[in-house]
Amino acid sequence: MRRFWIHQVLPAVFAAVPVLAAALVFVAVPADARRDYLARVETSPIDWIILGIGFTLFVAQTVLAWRAMRWQSADFDLKADRWLSHLCQAAEWFPLLGLIGTVAAILQTFSSITPGANPTPQDIIRKYAPAITATGGGLYMAFINILPVWVVAIGRDLIRSLAGIAPPPEPPGAPGAKL
Figure 1 (cartoon, helix red, strand yellow):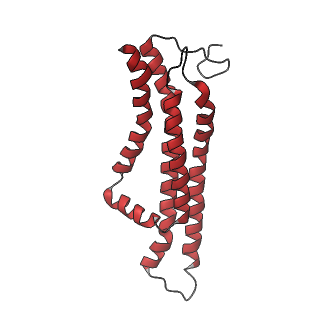
Figure 2 (spheres, rainbow, N blue to C red):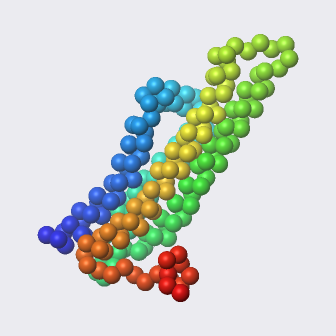
Figure 3 (cartoon, rainbow, N blue to C red):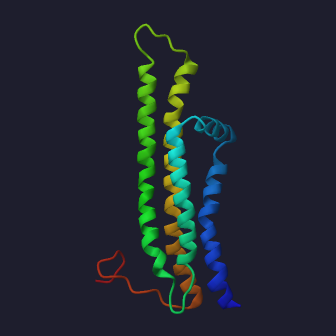
């Protein structure tokens, strides 16, 4: 029974943690803000790019995280580690994509405020809103896309400890390695 828990149940539970965390953060946003965000995203191409790439990478990383925590004959399945690392580094793109959307929306807003023009507050808000949605979407995607790699590191250590297996030695020069 212990073997079943260590080999099957715990990897699946740990792989579900990033999905649950992403859902909790989404639900924690006040309902009005969430509804307004979703309404404004419909007309914002940069948000579609951020969300499309972000969720695609998140799903790929979650599947790879599950594979990385499965126990093979003598150790974890290490084949997924390289791709997990690459995809996690891609999380750095999302705040930058959000910033591009922010700058574009701010420029669009300022260009509508010209001498002689009398834009309404609603018009200014409509043009400025993509700045906020792009920033928020980029930060959210960055957050959820760093979770799977972190969960793999923690999950492997916990599974090893429950299985009574010593952790692998730290490579020389790694943080926490003995000199």
